[in-house]
Length: 340
Ligand SMILES: *Cc1c(COP(=O)(O)O)cnc(C)c1O
Image 1 (tube, rainbow, N blue to C red):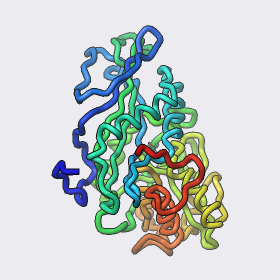
Image 2: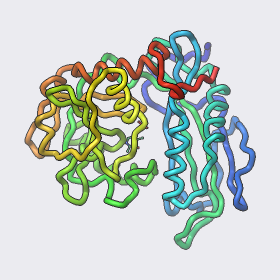
Image 3: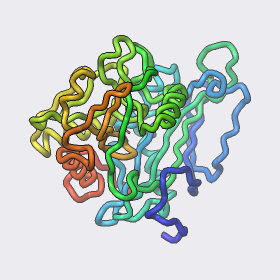
């Protein structure tokens, strides 16, 4: 490991690594795929992705464990979710076993970019697929490219997890029966104005409510909510327009099976939020970011057990899941894929 990276201070930015995986879809089939050192993509000026945003993606990480192995966390779920995204966008499915194989190859080819255990860093993996052939009348492309690249990233929180402040957004993230439940770039393109607005107003993130009634909590731009009640029940909002976070699903399992907590996935009314004592945002990037304060047009809700530091339940969830990912705590069957 001598590529002169300052492992403790990587931040979250793209850094080009050695090799990436590419497979092309043409005449109804995927080619055999290959690794390449070429980080540039050459496509038609009229490619489906450029004109009508026909693209989806995934995000996962490779971790260096305490005993020096390199592992990934539940990549089969990312493969499944990418299938679900592709179906909704009329894109071909990339076989799930080949998805996991591509992830494995990319990690193996970029081993020296997997940050050491204890640095807090990880190798972030970005699988994605896009329509590459020309499309001018609105229809699905005929040809597609599936790629996976990797980039080393630092710990999400440098200097400890400080609770963030979020605001209830005036914008909607996802429509009922829309595309909120798939991982499509288009969901992010239209969230940029909302997040820049939130930042300009001094908030770290947006809380989106359901578009139809604006009474129920959905999620943020890129993370699902977890709430903790006064009596230590862990609650996560249920809705067809929430992106099913793998981190959130794993944390709910950990809460129940490892910590013996009661868990509930159900509709959560914004009205109830003031009664919760802890709040966290879950996703691959941070595992859980604690939320200390939620502001609804000037009205502040302060999380009783988590406004100066991570609350006790969320801290336990965080420690247990990161312990599983880093090999300190035994994982449920099938959660950890050892790369080497
Ligand atoms: C990716 C994503 C998440 C987090 O999902 P993980 O699988 O836990 O990384 C949550 N919400 C949205 C909108 C996302 O795109």
